[in-house]
Length: 249
Image (tube, helix red, strand yellow):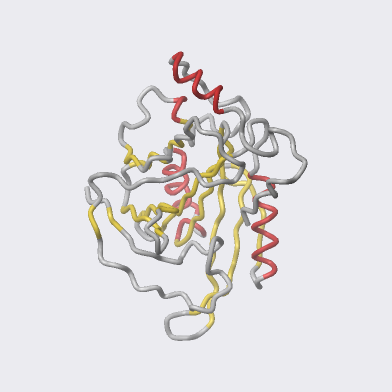
């Protein structure tokens, strides 16, 4: 879903590696505080680290993402121990978030929506497009294997935000994907996330590196209730669980 173009393709700087890291570094050295672009849909967040005076206040530092201290926070890790996603659980709702590098001059959420819709449809799901509190979003109904072995349907809501040289994606499930009041609470948390893009050059769609907080406490692993043969295993599946930690507050 987040395929990168071949490095040997004939592309300009804005299609390949992001040459704008120097701009970010210059802003940091000069102490420049930017504001979200008018009409960006981010006037109330999610935020870039340079858009807030105190971006760490009330948030947990995961390196590339500063996550609001709300609900129960878990992480998704690869077998090699690399942190790849963060899940915020709010009662019977949850949102999994990932941040990626993006081109300097254009957002990629529209393209990502198209790719998600194609992949889900190919694998037997149904996708509805709409506009929510965060702007354009997708609601998907995907087939899943229930714990009793029967087939069921899982509703997932995909939201996104384009920032300066980054893109933030959220996958909402539980009540936040189907109930308006619960969706409002989840969207509010999504808006409070801060992206720390960094100054290094990155290829568009490369994941922004995440790190574990120093005071994270381990939690008991949660059994995977997803069918091992499900076509939603991998980058599209927000339910695949690896070793986890919980931030206890």
